Amino acid sequence: MAMQRCFATIQKRACRHFRSTADSVAGLAKAKEKIDGQSASWVSVLKSAVPFLLTAGAGTATWAFYDGLWVPLLRDGQTASEVELISKGLLPESLICWAAERLIAKEVVVLDGVVPPEQLRKIQEELQLLASRPGALQPNPKMKAGNMQIRTDRVCYLRDPSSFVPLETGGPALCGPELRWCHRRLRSTAAQLERGYAAAGSERNFLVTAWTQLAQYTEGSGFYKWHTDGLDGSWSGILGWYFWLQRGAVRRRSVTGILYLNEEDWPKSAGGALRCKAHAAVHRGPVESHPPITEILPKGGRLVLFDSHSVEHEVVSTNRDRWALTAWFHE
Ligand SMILES: O=C(O)CCC(=O)C(=O)O
Ligand SMILES: [Fe+2]
Image (cartoon, rainbow, N blue to C red; front, side):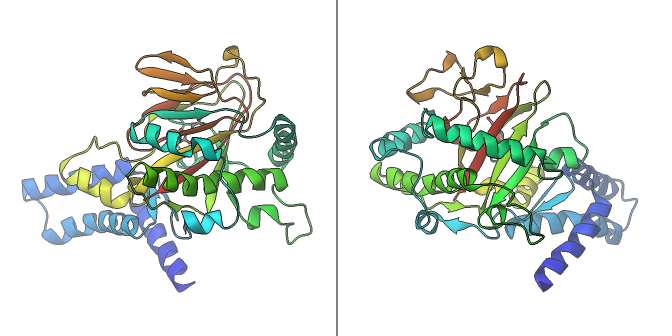
């Protein structure tokens, strides 16, 4: 509790200084100008550097400061073997080694049919209920911070058990048993991949966040611009160091796992494709390939896995509601 209060105080102070990472960078640049122009004392320069040091320090302590918000990313993460005690993963046993090998080769793994069609229908009923509950889905962190240019999805972070037990007020649980199944299976896929990597001679120890991200891209407006989920290495020098420290959890992302929860039949005309700058390794497809871009439709029951740092990707505008459940496996 004391720790939480301490972080809350830091958050308030830092937010007063910076509304976004861009502001923090601008603050630093200003401080440097002052040093260069010798127009300010070292005390004022150090004062400008305090929020910078706090956000960088907190990032390394597994919190992260993005877009004016503090995110407790890995605070209650679990090892892959702990996660696997609760549930099996989504990969069929026979494909575990194949998936790990393809990921090592920096390909995007695409696997259809990991959720049976009758279960998908029940999942969609649960999603409709969730979407109808006021406040259950929230604007994503970037939108909350006022940035509407990068991504427009609404999100809900699922946690086990709190998202799946009846509310204290007597209301029904936020999500039902089918979404819990998806949440658990997706997280446990980390343990399967660990075994696959070990068999391929490239040992990994994954840490899996307690939450998964359920995202809804709404009809006619949902998109997410080109990005990588980890650090893309485009900054060098002091800013490179800053982002490395500040993005404590993001730099530790290793594999991104996405499970699509839409209808099985998703036509190309519906838009909403995930486009990746990488080759795809497809087990039951099809996906469209226009090198260097692979276009993956968000068909229900489709699992997509890729390297969080190297695979640049975007979600193109969708013409129908589009649901995706995402987990990040950290190292
Ligand atoms: O939903 C998708 O297909 C990808 C979403 C994404 O890139 C992300 O949440 O980082
Ligand atoms: Fe992403």
